[in-house]
Length: 369
Image 1 (cartoon, rainbow, N blue to C red):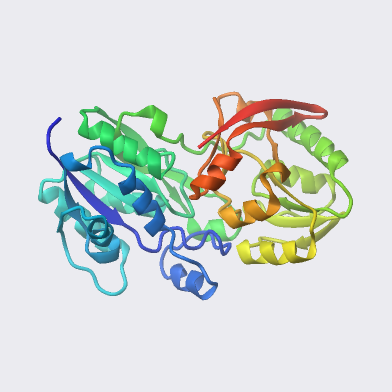
Image 2 (cartoon, rainbow, N blue to C red):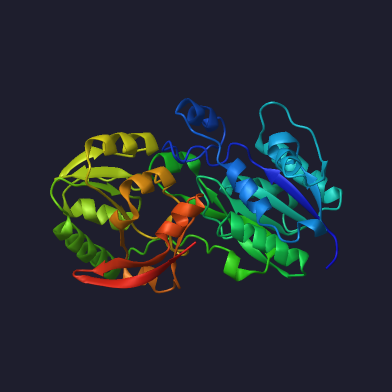
C-alpha cells in the first residue's frame, strides 16, 4: 500500500438551510439560515469521515485553510499542508481555486464535504482529472457522485488508498430558485471520477413516474393511509408526489418539497422547519411522521427532507414513522436508507419496517445506514 496524496475541501455553509426549511445555501442564503437559528452541518460530517479512516497513516493531506479543511485535520493531530488562502467569508470561487491548486500540487484524490452545489464547483475546477469522494452534507444531495454517508466516504477513501479503480458518476444541477418555489428542476451538469466502490455510493435521484398505473397506485396507497389515520393525531407529511396523493385524498393542499402538518382533516402548517415542528410537538402529544423513499436510492431520511432532524425523529419516536411507496419505486431497491447525521438515530431507524404499497397491501423492507 503506497503513500497517497489526498486533498480536503469543506464547504462551511453547506447543509445549513435544511433544518430551518430553506431549500439550500447557495449565494447568500446561508446568512438567512443563520438568522433562522441554523447550526453548521459540515463540521460533524467532516469529523465523522476523518475518524473512520483506517489508512490515514498512508495519506499525505493537502487541506484548504481553516474551516475549509485544515482546522479538522489539526484538531485530530493529522499533519497537512495548507493550500491557498481564504477570507472571513468563503465562496464557490474559493472551492474552485483551491481544488485546482491541489491538483497542481499533486493531489491524487480530492475529498469534498458539501452538497450538489459544491459538487458542481469541484466539477468545474477539476472535471475528471483526478478522482473525488463526496461527503454528503448539503441540503440538496441528489448526485450519484456522493457517498451514502460520512462513514461510507471514509471507506471509499480507504479503498482508493488500497488500490481501487475509478469510474465516472454524474453531477446534477438543481435549480435552487425553482426548488424554493416547490419545483424540482434538475439536469445533468457533468461527471466526476470516483473510486469504484458501488456499495458505498448512492444512486442518483430518479424522477417519479407519471404513468396512469403509477398514479392509480398512489391513489390506492393514499386511500389506505387516510383510512388508517387516527383522530387527534398530528401527521407530519414529508415531501413527494406520493404524500401529495394523501392530501389530495383529504382534499387539502400540499407543498411538494416541504413538510406539512395535518390533524383531523385540517392543515396546521405548511413547509415547516425543525423549530416549527418541535413547537407543534409541544401542543400535540400524538404524532406520526409519514415519508416516502427518494426515488432511485431509497433514502427515507437524510436526503430531501432535512427538516426531519434527529431531534424531531427522537421526539416523534421511531415507532411512529410510516413509510409509503409504490411497488415501482421499491422494485430496484435492495433496502431503504437513512443518513440523518446522528449515528444513534440511524441505528434506531435501522432494521425492518412495513411499507404501505397499495390499498390494504404492504411489504417489509430492510432499513440500512
